[in-house]
Image 1 (cartoon, rainbow, N blue to C red):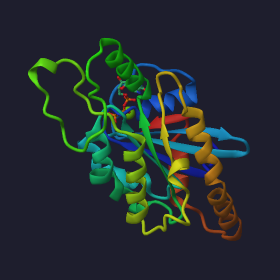
Image 2 (cartoon, rainbow, N blue to C red; image 1 turned 30 degrees about the horizontal axis):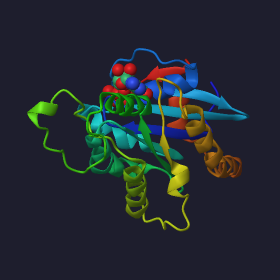
Image 3 (cartoon, rainbow, N blue to C red; image 1 turned 90 degrees about the horizontal axis):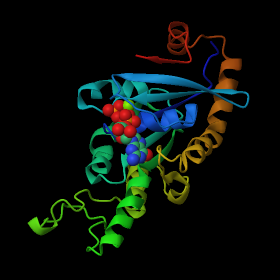
Length: 243
Ligand SMILES: Nc1nc2c(ncn2[C@@H]2O[C@H](COP(=O)(O)OP(=O)(O)OP(=O)(O)O)[C@@H](O)[C@H]2O)c(=O)[nH]1
Ligand SMILES: [Mg+2]
């Protein structure tokens, strides 16, 4: 198996759709998933480069593994579910610090998945003539009994994601002005319909190119062997694997 040129890691709470995004991109399908155990990686040939994409478990019990998966990452996707405010909150509270082991020039994207559901909900709300309960708000709205069963999930807006992206940059000690702009790095996707999924991965691969070239250059100039990568490569025979 070829040695990966760069590593991209998907982080986020359970059930936000990380595995589904990966399936959609690598297999062009939306298929049934089971909650990920530990993590799994996939290799994607992108032009002359081998990209490794790491799918991590969102469940709390696997949290300790997250920083290991982020070690040496050239890009991290912070994934939330657009219908679930708490999944955005968790990114900052639980997942951001895991990226301390990522490369110093790591690229960060904030991705709201399940965009197909918000469209459906918005449509449903309009059709029924009910009041719009879909606007984002940081605390749960009081839900009158008369409205129970309408729409209980809050939506996360693009502006919420952009604000989180700004806080990620600050946490990383990066200047907003000299970093990649939020408009470019905040995506809304649907693993179900495929909306924006190719754009997400390919935008990130493009942006990872300087990191790939730097790494190739370092490897050429150094006779030392990267033990971490070799152990990963030698223990994985298949295109994808669990670990
Ligand atoms: N409607 C809709 N459902 C989705 C989408 N993406 C994922 N799902 C569903 O959401 C559930 C969770 O998806 P997974 O991809 O397993 O989520 P995950 O983030 O990998 O979860 P963990 O492995 O537990 O961390 C599944 O029932 C998926 O079918 C999407 O874009 N739209
Ligand atoms: Mg999963």
